[in-house]
Amino acid sequence: MSDKALAEHIGAFVKHKRMEQNKTQSELAEEAGISRSTLSLLERGEAVTLSTLIQVLRMLGQLTILQAFDVQEGPSPLQLAKLQKGKRQRTRHRVLRKNNPAKEVDW
Image 1 (cartoon, rainbow, N blue to C red):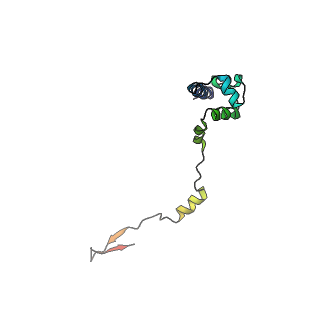
Image 2: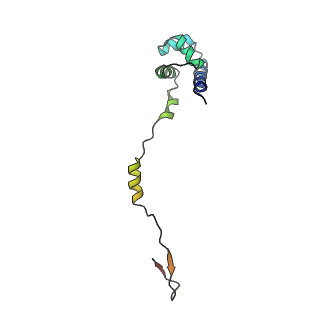
Image 3: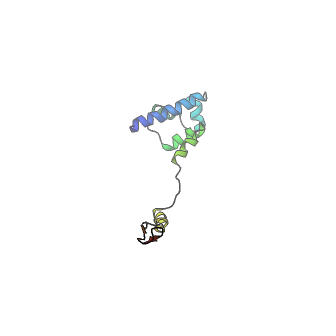
């Protein structure tokens, strides 16, 4: 998806949520502390600041969609390497003794 298409997709989402809440552009813009024309730009997929998008999402109660950007802290590559170091890398072959096939020998 192109940048323009993504911006339009986000704008359509904002417009849909605004209309779902039965708010006019003027009402939402005032709540978000932005101008109506800025909100109109956002809904049309034009360039607006990230701050503007966050303010509008907050007023629409949609900040939860930003959870997709949460960073999951896991072990660092060095920690993973240290954890892997203790694991066995090879297996031993089991050989049957010729005179007593019931006994196995590890080599």
